[in-house]
Length: 606
Image (cartoon, rainbow, N blue to C red; front, side, top):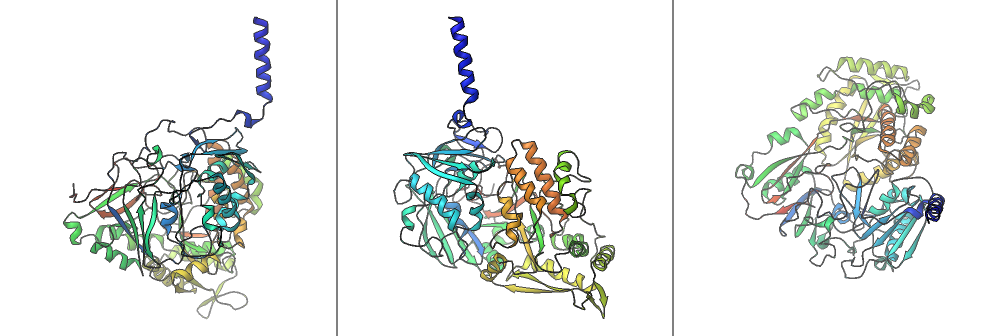
C-alpha cells in the first residue's frame, strides 16, 4: 500500500508540474498588484470608512467652468466629473489605504493564474442598474469593446492588451491578454460597466445630454448645462450592504455648482451656497478665512495628510514646437524661473519644491548618479538620454530675489550655446528671429496668472518676449487636446502604484495622437522601454527600480518648470460635514470626499 501511495503521489505531483498556469488559479475576493490584498475575505468595511455613519444631508461643491455633455467616457464634449465618480461602477472596487488592491464590487470574485495571462470575473447575481435591470456578462463585454474602440483614448491602451474576451458561464467573463502585463487584470476590474441597452439606438461616440443609466449608488436628480448638476442617493441601490460599501455613500445629495472663476466660487462658499472648499493656496489658507461663518464655528478648517507622490505641477513646454525642442532652451527657462521668490511671495511661507515627478514617495529617483538596477535599466539608452539622467540632475536654487542673477547668467550661457544671442535688445537666432512664445491660460485662472506675470517680467531681462493668451474653458480643452500651445500650466497627479496610465502620460504615441496626457510631446525610447519594464515587473522591488529610472528620464528631460507641492490637503467645510478619524494612505483623493463623509445637521464646532 505504501508503494502504491507513493506512486500515486508522484504521479499527482508530475501532473501538477505539467499543468498550465491557469489550472492552478482559484477565485478570490480581491487582487493586489504585488502579493496579496491586505483585507481578508470576511472584512466588514474599508479601514477608513465609518460603518455606523448616518445617512442624509448634502454637500455642494463649487466648480469653475461648465459642462455640455453627460457622457464622461468620450473625447467629445465636457462632462461633469461626478458622473463617473458617483454613478458608475467597475467589476472591482478600490481600497485607497493600499498602493493598489481591489476587492469585489459588481463581481463577487476574480480569478487569475500565476502569470496573469488572463483574468476571469464572476458577476454578483444581485447586481443591478438603476432601472432595476440586471448587470449581465453581455453588458460587461459590450462596455469593454465600446470603451476600447469608441471611447476616450485613455481606454485604448489597455484594450490593446486584450487578445480576446469571452463569456465562460452565465455570470462569468474571461479576458485573455496578448502580452505580459501584471496590471491588466486590475485595469479590467476598474473599467466602468455601462448598460448596453441604453446605447442600442444611438452613437456612443457622440456627445449628448441623455441621462445615463448606471449601477452605482447615485443617480442624476436634475441639472442645467453649465450651471449645476445634482446627484441623488438611490434608495434602491443594489450594493448598499456590500462590505466595500459600508460607511460609504452617506449623503443624500451631491451637488456641483458652476461659476465663471474661482473668486466667484469662493465668494459662494463664504456665503454658504457652497459647503466645502479645497484651498490650494497656503497663503490664502492663513489669510482668507476670517469671515463670519468661520468665527461662528459654522465653517471649520481641516488639514488632511497624505503619503502619495508629489506628481508634477508647473509650466509645461511643448517640444513639438521650436525652440522648446532644444533641451538647452528648456534648461535656460528653468534656470531663469525665480522659484524661491515666487514661492515666498505667493505662499507667504516656503513650500517644498517638486524635485521630481515621484517626489515625496519611496518611488522617487535618488540624488546623484544612478546605481544598481536603475543604472542597468538606463545603460542601453545612454547615448539618447538627456544630460543628467544617469549622472544625476537637480533643479537650480536661486538667491530668493526676483533678480536671480546667477540663474539668468546660466540661462544666458545656455541660450548662446543653442544659438540665441541679444541683438537690438532682443534675443535672436541666426535667422534674426526673436525668441517669443505664448503662455496659454484658462480665463479666470488667477493663481497661475500670478506666477506667469512675475515670470514674464524676468524673461524680459533675457530679451525673451512671452505673452499670455487667455481662453475660455471649452477652448482651453480643445487646444490642449490638440497640443495647440507653446507653454501652459500642467498638473499630473501620480499614484503609489504607477502602471498603464504612464503610456498615456509619457508614451511616444502621444506626440501625434490627440487627447493624451503627453502635453510636452516627449518621444523617448528609454521612457517607452521603462514603462514596458514596469508593466512586466513581478515584484515591488523590480517595479520601484523601473519607476526610479523613469523618474530620471522625465525630470532630466526638462519638460516642465516645476512649482511646489504640499503633503496635506486643506479643506474648509460646513461644520455638519464630518469624516472618519482614520485617513487613507492617499489622503484627500478619489474615494474620500464625499465618499466616506457624512452629515450631522446642527452640529456645532467641537
